[in-house]
Image (cartoon, rainbow, N blue to C red; front, side):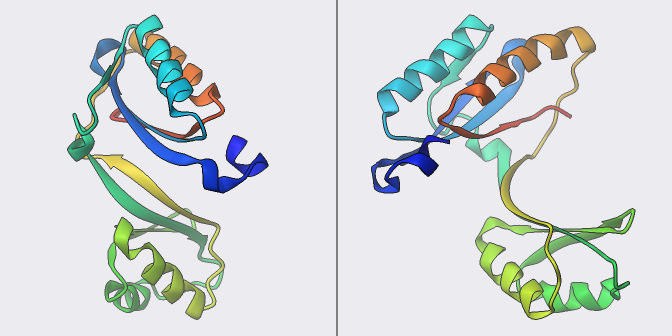
Amino acid sequence: KRASAKDLANFAEVNYEGKGPHGVLIFVETSTDNSTRTVANIKAYFSKNGGEVLTTGAFNYMFDRKALFEFENSTNLDLEELELELIDAGLEELEEEDGVVLIQGDYTAFGEINKALEEMNIDIKKATLERIPTTTKSFNDEQMTDITKLIDKIEDDEDVQAVYTNIG
């Protein structure tokens, strides 16, 4: 939010890893022009809501970085043929749900997959880099209320770009 309003050269991307209430793992990506302010805010959100910020890299390995693409299969593409075309670009998984094709690859393959889809004149609806938990954990409604409260606080911070959890 701030990054779009000011000179981007003054901004740094900083990630925070924390454990929230009931043991939920929370990975926070930020873009900030004042890392002192951002770390103080993130630590305050966690501590006031039953959690704690952990050292960098504490559970980074528990999230895989993935390139995700989504588009409507309005022209009824042959998905097997599409899959064969995209394997060389770095495709890991392709599935269709209700006419929407979901493509997943390693984050390093983002550019290659994007280029291949554009060359096939596919109208991409969503193209993102995300962190996918390698294992998930389920929580009951009462626990989710506590967790959601913390996540909402974090997401409301203007320096926060994305929040990922291991909620299953």
